[in-house]
Length: 352
Image (cartoon, rainbow, N blue to C red; front, side):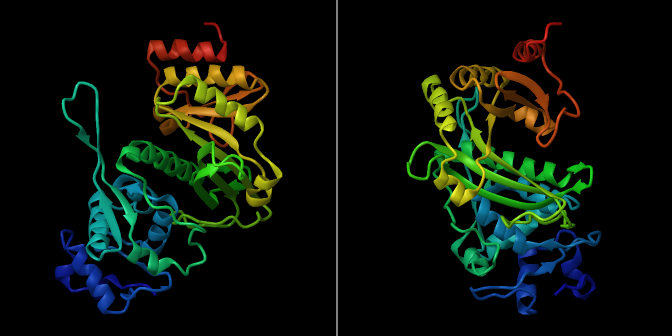
């Protein structure tokens, strides 16, 4: 069912109208079910006179159930890229007023600051919101509550990596394969299902190609691939420069012995490890540790800054090369400082 923009009173169609009021009007008109329980997918437009496409709030809520917490910027990029940021803020405020999502404030210490600096708020789906979508076939097998505030930096950068990978999947175009057609995410996954430790930060299974032609939706699915589709699997290791070298090297050893029959029975083929680091200095440190501990291994690496440019390094049996996430070589090399350029050349073992 599609809500007709023109049917709204003029006072609700102005750009600075209250979305909370708009949301209540939709419920009163039966466009959105108010009581808890299973709901059908509802696709309805926001309230700017210049908006001619629609926002699937149902898909937003399901995605929050999968991903845990997202910032306003994440939600804007995934579902409302053709709208203004202000419209995204209205949407979130309205859902918050109805008790469907919750906002969490957090702060972090930054260099040369005497007090913690507030960061972008994080949004999660509430119990009431989950009750509205629980019966949907795309609801995650297991919902995990957001972790404590001390993990907010780590988990928000994990979310940023996943959001960026979704964006790259949507933009994928190689041969006859175009776009994103399936996504499965599971956080804090055991490398060996029989052992509680170690954990990868996220298992990310992406299906590319196919016939899914809805770039404003996230297609949650782990169904078997169809002709014309390609599936890639990643084990995300989000490093915030807090773990000692012994832990980093030890994890390489664990990855060598992962991919047990119990794992494959539950998840399928074992994923390719990917490292996200805060700096090129830290990336080089981890690269050297893993190359020594796992000389025949294969993994890819990027930094927070490189991720935006889709620039990665691949280490395969000790040889390092440049690539993008889904293919090689990368489209562009990011702008680097002289120190970073020297470090990159050293990792690639290329002399000027």
